[in-house]
Image (cartoon, rainbow, N blue to C red):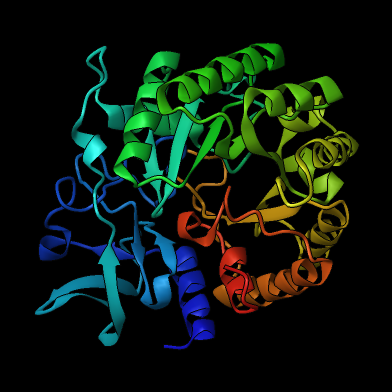
Length: 380
């Protein structure tokens, strides 16, 4: 399977979902890494009581997020030598579940399972959602694609509020084990100053318990709209920052993200990115999009503008998550995603923005295609 075929297959798997059962799921939660729903649920259907893989590996090291869909034509089956991926009755390729980190079985000094505090995304990204809460849900102004609240209620697999000291403990354990190369921190939208203070404390705890002064990785905070906010996150010690713009088209942004749009305008985001590039440096800032909810033309306009400012782009492939207001809808075709992301990759490549792979890379990006498309141009 050549790289472009692998890219197309990953797009198909994210759009159509995948099935697995029986012998193929043996070892999940012991040998192989299982889902723990640190923030969102990305499956097409809930699966309370059933352990499923968090992600898996295609040939060439391509990471794919596992999105359960009982109607998918794709299925992972156990074979003599391991696991094979099928489309209906056609064998496509060998796949592998990812190994389960040792720290998942450990507890903090306070007695909490470490896996309920931080999880490994893909192969090497240590993920912390420092607060599984978004104020827009209470106002019924949540983003239409978001299922943060229902995921937390459905699975209750992670602590909704984590102690700062315990986040540092988990980071130390994951880094010492060697399963984490960088971190990703985020939370639902809430009071900006409280979030800044919390992130300062978290970074101080991680630094104290790991001995690291600058932490490789990315913070995805509530939108920062002032220079003081951007400086505060930088001074806390995280090396990169991302802004979840979600949708580039301003009218669609207001319709799909009513609460966020009422608080942070399109221009506010751009100003935040502009300031963040000055503070963090080119390539260490990300514009984050939910890809598939707006036309190709406006999405690519966003990619051009963001890269023009010196920032990178992370476009997540949208799926109609259960518990979101768009549950039951359909994403664009895999072909649409591939054609669009290949155009986006050409824009990013031509802009010559530093890739920032020490903070975010294709190995931790099972739910996006852009890193994989850039690998076709030699950017790892």
